Every structure is written in structure tokens, then in C-alpha cells.
Image (cartoon, rainbow, N blue to C red):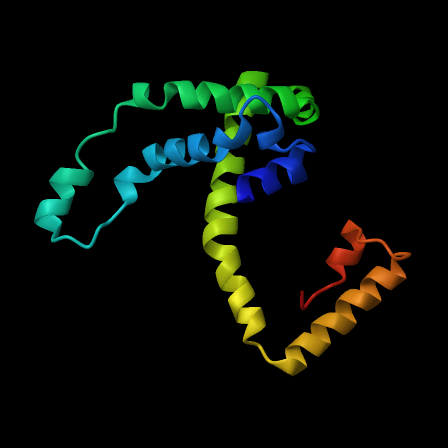
Length: 159
């Protein structure tokens, strides 16, 4: 869900509505594991964990097809961002790799790891916090003509 949400929010196209289909999130998660495996700890004694996890790279050929499918999605749906990157002197290919990396990390690291904790803190913040949030958000949106705009969001200091 987070991968679909970020894809639609950033590029206007849900990954699941493309050739990636329902397999997009698993392709992204698998690729992400390959990126993060040197940082993973299982809580084993260091003398075991280091040689088992941190002394070798997982073979990239195992995720190459997944990466190609993800790259194809991003190169297709992110045309406007890639055009902008080219205008700034970055190659389309490099920009597409960067978008894939950032989007995948944001969808998993941000939405699956950090966002639930943030929501838990707001939920446990109590009635006074909730009332302040409601007043701030409704006031900023009302001042923006009933629309959620970037300017309205910037005025929501508490949110």
C-alpha cells in the first residue's frame, strides 16, 4: 500500500495499475533488502553476525529482473521529473535510478517504519493536542479557499 501510495502521490500512477501489477511492492522490498543487508543486525553475537551478514554482498543477479521492472515503471511514469532532471544537467538514466532509490526507501522506511510511530504519538497525544490540530488544520484549509495547498500546509506548524 505504501509503495502504491508514494507512486501515485509522486507520479500520478499507482504501480499496481501498471505492468508491475501486484508484484511491485515485493520487487521493491526484495531490492531494498539487497541494499540494506550489510546494515542488518539479527542480535547475534558480533563474532557470528559479522562473518555471516557483513562480509559479503548478496549476488545482484538475483534482483536484476526486479530492478529492471521497477526501472521501467519509473522511466515511464516519471517523465516530468526526468525532463526536469535533464534540464538541470543530470542524465535521464541517473535521475531514474535516483528516483527509484528515493521512492523505494521513502515508501518503506518512511511509511512502513516511521509513519506508524508518528501516528501512535499523535493518537496518544490526548484530547487537547487533537483539538489544537483540528483547529489549526481547518483554519489553514479554510484560509486557502477550502483546499489543501502547499501554502496551507506550510502554515500548519503543529501538524
